[in-house]
Image 1 (tube, one colour):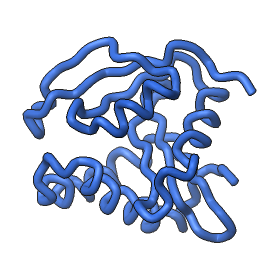
Image 2 (image 1 turned 180 degrees about the vertical axis):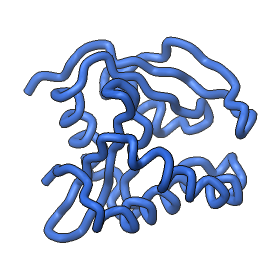
Image 3 (image 1 turned 120 degrees about the vertical axis):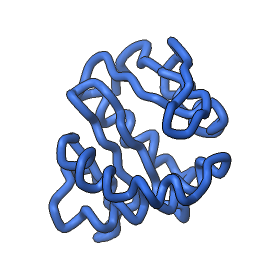
Image 4 (image 1 turned 90 degrees about the horizontal axis):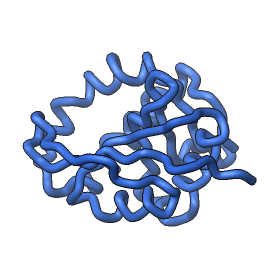
Length: 146
């Protein structure tokens, strides 16, 4: 089930964020992500529309949309990846928002390929000043209809 984030969910989604972002971005020092934990928790999550994927009472993933157009986060618990949870979250928000964009590190090839399968295309690339890594900006080419 996909539902909106509730206050009681914050610690769980932040646990998912930290563990899965460290795994997905093994080309960036773990300390970078640990140092940004509070910024994500207190500055980004509160201003985002956050949807969680819940199976029973366990949250297994989440997606955060900033300003109704930018996917600021899409993370799935490391133990539940490759089971279609990310796809379900993307399909859910594509039906709610138009003109979605996102940023993803070029070296995060698994995520780049996932977004391409979800009908996103690379529209530009730049250097992320925080990490000095190349980052793609990707845009959704069209809505997915069920």
